[in-house]
Amino acid sequence: YDDRDGVIWMDGELVDWRGANVHILTHALHYASSVFEGQRAYNGKIFALTKHSERLVKSAAILGMKLPWSVEQIDEACKQVLEANNLTDAYMRPIAWRGSEQMGVTAAKATPHLAIAAWEWGKYFDEEKADKGIRLDIATYRRPAPHTAPVDAKAAGLYMICTISRQHAEVRGYDDALMFDWEGRVAEATGANVFFVKDGELHTPTADIFLNGITRQTVIELAKNRGINVIERRIWPEELEQFEECFLTGSAAEVTFVSEIGPWSFQPGDLSRQLRKDYDDLVNGRQVSA
Ligand code: PMP
Image 1 (tube, rainbow, N blue to C red):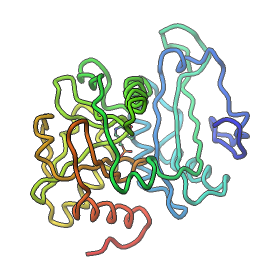
Image 2 (cartoon, rainbow, N blue to C red):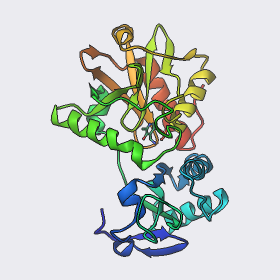
Image 3 (cartoon, rainbow, N blue to C red):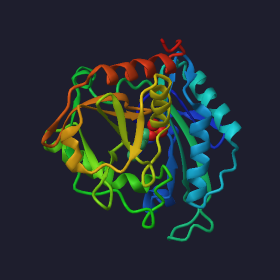
């Protein structure tokens, strides 16, 4: 991704894409002292921009990093990046990290930095596949318990097990993996939250040990607006065979249907299709139909 045209916002300046580099002794590269965001722009408007900027600042604070930019400044910088790259429909990646001012686990002198990139990024999963539903493997690694990691931060360190899980799933012929929590309950996919449908109701794991996704919260609102009962609760793998439909939500994944999780299969139905359409209408600034 480093050899392309465009500009990236780095510490307050727009720099050439190819020159947006950090030193090999960057603290974040060694000790995962970085946090990031992922958001999409539709028709020139960044969906839920302030929520993403707020989460970035919060994630940084959880890692003890005080960013020298406010939420408003980060919002403005994101808009500037989109415009400077002449993009209307794009994925955006703000990232904050500790720099190369110091080596060692201590972070006393390693300064927080911030960069924002944007590029055209189609669907997160193959579009044709996603319409039928993608296939999820069961991840070997479980999400860490809340007293073992900062689970509310969108922190790079938490993605180590996600990348391993997704890579393992792909080698085994799956599209992604479903992760359980440390007690064995259904948690989320490697970069998206998960929902199930049964008897016209929506079931989703309580977001207390993993990221309460902005898309997750949006889809819950859209469902409630339609009078659909949304049940946030602990979900055990034994229950998976009873669910009729399943989908993932995420800023990158949007609403993606799931057809299989290990031995269990699902069929995208009316409810999943309706919510995918509602989400698509909302992010594109269209009236969500009644
Ligand atoms: N869980 C994980 C692990 C993720 O990486 C993401 C994507 N940021 C999500 C959930 C969904 O979050 P959001 O809807 O805010 O993008």
